[in-house]
Image (tube, rainbow, N blue to C red; front, top):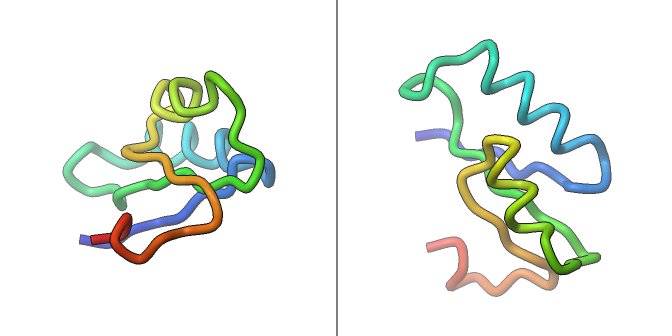
Length: 65
């Protein structure tokens, strides 16, 4: 399965919405939100946009397993 890291600040939410509109659930990559500016409510916003997971920087390698 392919994974895509989407930067929340750099249009990652809009890109995720478009991917979800054009690709079926079984065919799209696993989309992971990534941000250095973790704010309260960001995780819920990202998941609502269609992202599959959310991590904040700095990234710990065990978070990617």
